[in-house]
Image (cartoon, rainbow, N blue to C red):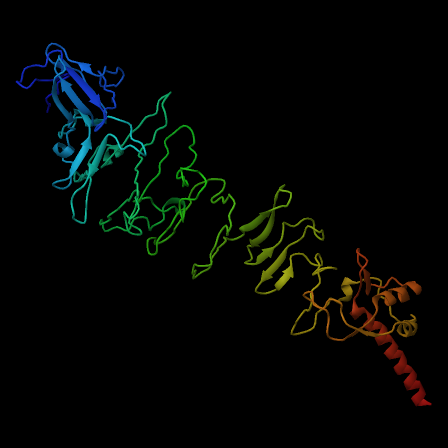
Length: 500
C-alpha cells in the first residue's frame, strides 16, 4: 500500500484563485506581532526570511514548529488574509477518543500502513519539555467519566508456532532509542503529569499505571525451579539491562527535581494490602549486599512496629550471623549467630581456649544461658555489677577433687586468730542500685580488714580480691571453711570438758 505525497512547497493564491506571484508571507507568534521562525527544509537547519517571498508561481517551502499567526499580502503589500495556521488533527489516524475532542500539534508521517511487513514510522516535530508540550497536545471536551487521549490495542491470537524461541515474543508497544556519540541526554519513555490546584481528588493522580489481567487460569511462579528460584512467568514490570557496562541503578527514586533538597515522596516504595501473595521483596542475585541502607535518617533503618508477623519479624538461617562494625571501622565483629546445635550464640568469634577472645555466650533449651568455653568468662565486673541475682536455688560451685591440686586440711592454721581479728559490720550502700542511695541495712565484713588480716598471716587468701581500679571484693563462701574449722575445734573442747 502506498500513500500520496504532500507537496514539497506550499502555493498561495489571491482572492481570484490565481497564484500570488511575488507575494509575502509574514509569520508571527499567535495573537502578537512577534516574529516566529520558519525554515526552508524539514530538518530545520535553514531559516526563512520573515516575510517569506513567494516565487512567480506563488510557491515557497515553509516548515514550522507549532501554530503561527500568518499574514499574507500580494507583491504590493495588500493583505490577502490574517489567520492562524491550522494544524491537522489526529482524528484521521484514529487517535481522538471521543466526538468533539480536539488535538493541536503536527506529525510527519513518512510511511504509515496497516498492512504487515512494512515499517510504521511517525516522526514528531519539536522537542518536548516540562513546560512546552510539543509536538502534540490534546484538550478533551467530553463530560463523560472516562476520557482517553489515544489508545493502541493489539490482540495476540496467532499461537506459539514460530520456528525459533526468539520469534515467539508478541510485543504490543515497543519504543527503541539509540544514543550515539555526541548525543545529548536521552529518555526512553518520559511521561509527565502536571497537577494543578483542585484538579484531582486524593489518590487520583498516577504518572504511569501497569495493569496485568491474568485470566490464563495459571498462578504463575508458585513452584520453585532450579536452585529454589521462583520461575519468572509473568511480571507487572521487568527491568532488563543489555549493556557492556553497568548502569547506576535499575530503579532510582528521585526527590524534588526543582531544588534537589526537598523530599517529593511520602514513601519510596509502597506495597498495598492483599497485593502480594508470597514474598514482597525477593533477591535472587549474587550481589555483594542485598540491602544497603545509607543516608541520614531521623527515624529508623528498619521499623517493624506497625507490622504483624505470625512467625517472627526477622528470621536467620542455620549458622547465619548478625554483625556490627568496630568503632575504628577496621573490621566487623559478631553480635548474634544461630548455631548448628539450634543455640543462640552471643559475642564475637572465639580465639584460643581460655583466651579473652572467647566471648561466646550460648542460650539453649538444655543449658539455658551459659558461656561457650568452660571457665573462660566472667559475669559482671567492678564498676558493672548486678544489683541483685534471683534464683530458685543457690549457686552451684564446682568442688570435684579431681579438678584441684595442693589439697591440705585447715587443721593447724590460725583459724581462731582469723576469727578474732575479723569484726562483722552493718552498713548501707552509698549507691543502692539504679543511682538511688541504699535504704536497707546490710550485714557483712570489711574487705580491707580481711585483706590486712591474711596479709599479716602471710596467707595468699583467694577469698579476697583487689581489682585493677583499687576496689576491694570478697568471695564470702571462702570464709565458711574458717568458721567450720573453729566450730569443729570448739566441739572437741566441749566434748573434752563434758567427759571430765
